[in-house]
Amino acid sequence: MREKLANLNREVANYAVDPLIEELRKKYDDMPDVVDYLKAVEKDMIANIQDLLPQEEDQQQRLVQQLQQQLGTAGADSQTESAASRRYRVNVLVDHSESKGAPVVYEDNPTYQNLIGRVEHLSRMGTLVTDFNMIRAGALHRANGGYLILDALNVLPQPFAWEALKRALRSRVIKIESLGQMYGVISTVSLEPEPVPLDLKVTLLGPPLLYYLLNLYDPEFGELFKVAADFDVQMNRTPENQEAYSQLIGTVARREGLRHFDRRAVARVIEHSSRMVGDREKLSIHMQRVTDLLREADYWASQNGNGTITATDVQQAIDAWIYRSDRLRERMHEEIQRGTILIDTDGAKTGQVNGLSVIQLGEFSFGHPSRITARVRLGRGEVVDIEREVKMGGPIHSKGVLILSGFLGSRYAMDQPLSLSASLVFEQTYSGIEGDSASLAELCALLSGIAGVPIKQSLAVTGSVNQHGQVQPIGGVNEKIEGFFDTCKARGLTGEHGVLIPAANVKHLMLRQDVIEAVRDGKFHIYPVETTDHGIELLTGLSAGEPDEQGRYPEDTVNAKVHARLAELAEKRLKFSPTTTMEEGRES
Image (tube, rainbow, N blue to C red; front, side, top):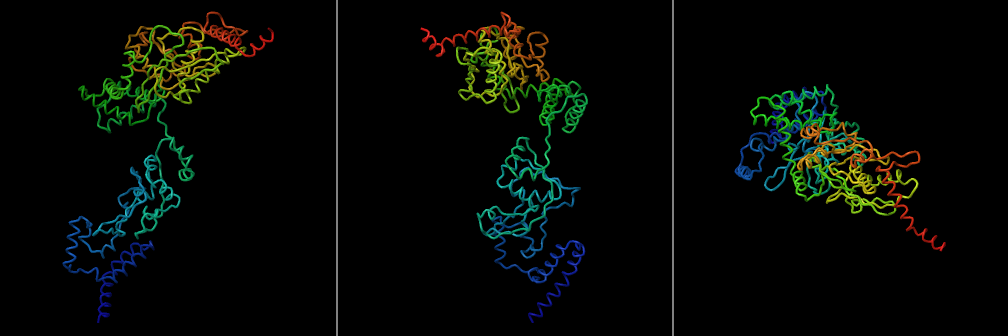
């Protein structure tokens, strides 16, 4: 009787299930794996038909459900369907039914599980349980068949994420694995989802330096990421590009719901864009900073009651940004004015010159003057860099000082030994110094100390030199000029103040309006120089002097005084030489 009843139930179940399954089989007839799965579902449903039929819940089951609800451990679907019916649910990992074209996915939190996927667990009566309905897709699943965009700086710090990404790209499959099982931390039985075939393009975003480091230290990086695209952050400031930049400003204003910019406001934004890259022939395409400027200019226009944004509103936004960022600059200039940091801006001193430095604080940078001094004595031709000796000078700065020895030897010691010992130092510096942009100032201070010719303290110097005495361009020229200008302006501009810069840096000048006006009125000067001789002439007021055919310099020139002093030091050194003393002893 039980056997006949069971056969009857199977026949009835088959009669109810088969038409539905057959409809699905026809729909997915071209997908053999789906057809096999539907056959297995049909067979399982017929075999377990009793579990699918409605049954009365006994009191114990109701108590268990109430306890699960109170503890918050019952899933949302556990109240509406039985455990048996969950077996026949379809867990849709990725749904592209509404997508148009290939998927493009950007994952901003690329952890291991967010990339590869995971198997979630549900706590029931103190036990963790799971089934295939709790398999969750990762970014690789969502982007499969399309494009995945990742920020390299976000992927690399995540534990196991970088290796998992490379493993998936190498094997071309996505395999959801538990880290605990993978590394043997836990040994509990869990699901092992079937690997999913992977076919996508991965785009990594990041700074150029990170690309070079990965290409150098990760041997698999070049194989997996073969196409490199290095995007520039600036473009040429041509009339065509300026017009396109103006249109871009208008587009951003419309998109952000900002007021319209008048012609002068657009021109001021373009000028500031050139200032951002430190080159009047270039424009910045770092749109985040430009967009922030446009938004703040719109705010000041509303505060000023303007219907359109004017150049004054843009300048007010720039000034406000500087005001929020220049606390340390104001403190340093305050200490200079109070005399705590010793800077001379008038008179003349021997072996002393005003050098210029730049301090970078995030996106804000500013220049300030520094006193550079040189002391000369009898020695063996050594130029001592005090910063290097105490390990406060970087390698580039030390290189710049060593170049000075080559310049002195090639110009003044071709026929006699270089018999001096000189020391160079940045006064009142308590942190590291790097860069060679002060080598021109150091050389001028050194020549002044050797020749005994004073240097005008109303001038400051920036620039790099090579062993031939040619002045080379440097960075941060605008900030350096403005740093010395602010110091001189606070003490009163006399018309004698100015800055010596490399002639190659003239194209980089994008100065503040107050500096431009002071130069136009003759209260402040900017002198482009190409050689050391030109620079020392401006600083001392004496001619540098050109050598004749015998290599002798005209009298009352800086080079003549330097040559004469070095010859004097060479003679003194010869008197103290041990060889000379021994010869004199034999003669006596």
